[in-house]
Length: 243
Image: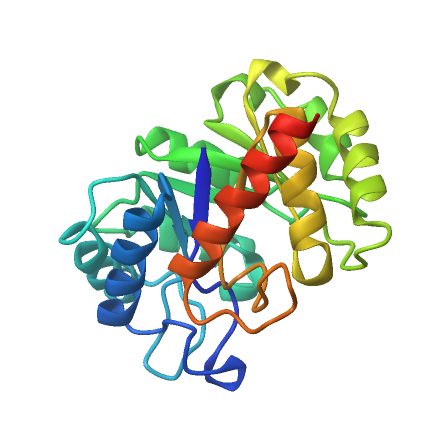
């Protein structure tokens, strides 16, 4: 499985290739799926470009994407979109159009309650376990562990020289098949491509897209999410067959 992460917290300052509006996100998603992506992760944006959990922002984004693709679509619930845990929980409960899944960062305050609310609403939970946090330890003790859709092993080390080592340490902290759930391993910025190749070597699901990197493996600027997905599949398969 290769998920495409369409935009993340990036904004207009990161260049015109980053899709922000529902229409741009839908077109980018369709092209990425045509290139081989089998799942979508998106950060719905307000008109000013900020991440939002508001149903008035979420609904048109999901509807626009689903009008063009049939693969699962997931969203963020990151604390930066709504810092107050209680308010974040209310946002989730007020959604009028539901994503197929949503990522929950396990090191953030209120993660357990948020995940439980999503599961109650029939939304799959991607348990985001970031390197450099206590997320893995918290998740290991979570009674919700067996109920999540999958674990996102998120490597925040952006150095191409050390990101793979950080990824291996994170996977070790998580253990083999944490709570019996599948693992999606990915990196970001300078660590994005080394960690994607490690995922290929290990046979783990991964993701790529403009959220994780603006650059192709050769360092050239990416022109689209579809271009990143195409390059990602080549890198992944090459690493898988060379392992």
